[in-house]
Length: 630
Image 1: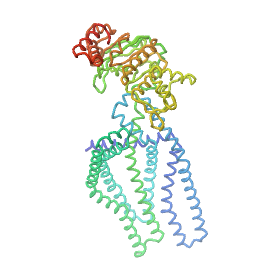
Image 2 (image 1 turned 45 degrees about the vertical axis):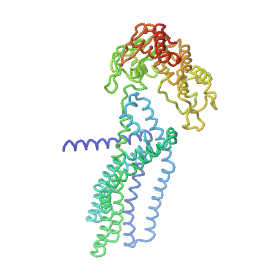
Image 3 (image 1 turned 135 degrees about the vertical axis):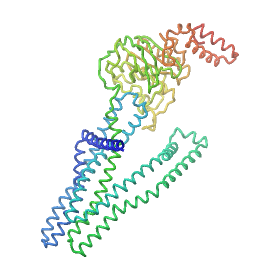
Image 4 (image 1 turned 60 degrees about the vertical axis):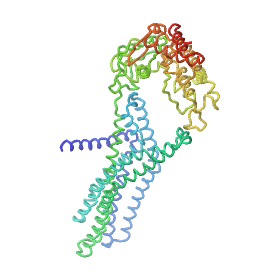
């Protein structure tokens, strides 16, 4: 029992800390908004208490005491002026201050979030748990942060107002205070139980709601449109939708009876018992026992209404604080996360020259699974290297380590004889130009998708982009588009935007590596979506253009690696073979076996008139003895 209580106290403590963190964060972004939230909530509760506890009592007492009409009206006018001023202040907040501050909060908060997301290491985006919390932190973050701070002030001033209401009623009539217990019971017991039921019901409904959301999404997304029209999959989707609706109905029935009883108890305790009970009690004191004045009756009935709504507001804001605490937990965890490889990490300037990059006994594990084991390899400046091997051999992981998306679990990577972790990260990465296989297009112009924000003189930009597109083979296609290199890619924001084929998109990605001026160029499966002729042309251009650069490319098609200065064959996370194409063919190991099999397939396709045995024999002879493909 003690352990559970302790855990609950820690949770509550953390929730309080999270809400204070939210106030501090909003204060740093827009301090005036926090101040206005505090003033606004204070004035709101003050108005409730003033009218019910003081204004009514003063007016009725003045009438009973026979005060002059002028005196009463003077007081009423002063109150009216003050209240009108408060109302004007609220209108100014709603009409001017809040919109301006909300825009400032939106900008300030998302700048922090975007900077943080830009600064965390790649592993965070590949960690599903971290990524889920990141997306939850990002979703309507500005609105929820402002709501959290507003609820903090509602809770604080609600608690103060509740105590004041209790004191005022106690001063008027000690017994009347007992009636406040009814809304307290209604809000803190029955309403809390209702919240638990709502939580359980929503949790049970979640799978059905996800299914409904999925069906709704599938019905309007363009990528599903062809299958929806060519098959009868619509009937299956409709069945899933009906089952989900039925599931929601079953869940609703499961909780209806308990929720109905608890809601009835909540209404009775929160409203009926205090309203009817206090009115009957006050009427008896005033009319029967004549121990309460009309002014006191007016005050306690007015205070009864105010106190009820103050308690309801206080309870709701307190409940919201704990709900908001979870959101703030995600936001706080993300913003306070200590990056393992911060993008803004400073260090030595690596310069512009690459003499050598060496992997020295490098091992790497991801989620406790070893991906690379004791890898030793070297890339010398101005040379061309190929990384080959089956899927999952560790080729792309090598590139990620080279670019410092990750750091080795053990071993070191050296640039010009110095550990790469000693260099300024952004300056280090500026040494590399990359064309990834799992590329992404942005909803921007072709030019921006090629340049990718790199510093290129404006006068030279279009010329260099066009040259890069020619080298990648995308120039003719791009120039056939309505606006050429200024054509927007995708239809995300432009109905006239271009949606290219996978091969054309890949060529634009390759152009990114061509356009960037740097000493080291990396091509990850640059021809996977290209036909053989386009592939041959592309590799000729890569070899010619990158002759003075250090070049590394990954390729499954071994016909493209023959001209590399050095080939590394990876298997099971380590370097199994290394050497020139000729050396590896002479070893007759894994590389020669892979090459022979690919040669056999190519020859089988181009020699349909020959028997299978002839094609196989000529393929092996051509690849092993001749050192090349026919």
